[in-house]
Length: 415
Image (tube, rainbow, N blue to C red):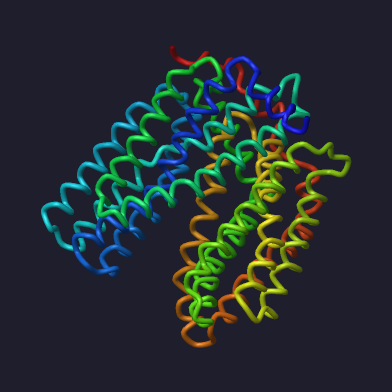
């Protein structure tokens, strides 16, 4: 059966014990940003204050995530996660208290920023565990493991916002915020309680510094640029699809359009993780970026919400394979002692691109309509296609796993 490969991965000793808690925590993380918006809006009555609080969350999440990942690579997941989760829980409590006390917009923005600064990077930690578990004698299964990670993330971002919306519609935005934090903390604590599958931290600071040089190689910069452009694509599509259905007097069509796009990505991502690959990942990446660019060009020709739904099925189908390839190429490029940092930097690049696109597309759509927003998405996809072709040689010959930066004596993870 097709799912046998995924089942065999999860039957690997220790795999399900870290993957399932990380998946649970991901749902909480996927709920957090939207929960902040609903929570602040429910008490202030203004989306301006809610947007500022949500923006503060996004900025600190993008900036702090790689620094937290650096600590994880340096000292280990089981040592860093508990205090980080405590800080996140306290930050959520502070934000809820500020909202209940009718604090000013500035303080609410600060509260949102505090929550963002403590978000646990469970996705990056789970991916790093797969790499540590399979790299030695089952490296050929890593793409399938990263496909499983990508699917888990996609499911979280389908389920999480739906839960928030349902609770907010029922007048329970505070419950949504508390539930988001509870899931994140519970998943993170369960992950921290599984030290056996965690990558070994590097005790020697000089060795860790040498390993960190692999983060500054050309292939990583290409992957950062690709993730930045993909974030722009996500942000542009989020605003432009909404604007398009409103222009056609069908605002309710936004939900099914986003849903079919996500389901298309889930299905193709599932199948992509199962296939045997003959071509190099860099070649697959260039092909996927080219397919995304061709799909987005069709956005400029759609005339109805139904036509838009057909096109986003095509564009959505390329997203999950792209995310899998980003993980595969990152794992083969950077030194394993800084792998969590690498995954976090790529996530931050994508988040930064998305935030910038959401802000810019509002102006573009006001001036040119929804097609102007789609033009931004087309530009981002074209930039990805060009970057993937220009970086083909760099991505085909990774620079990261060099013996010259191998740490002499990695320590065992703390009990």
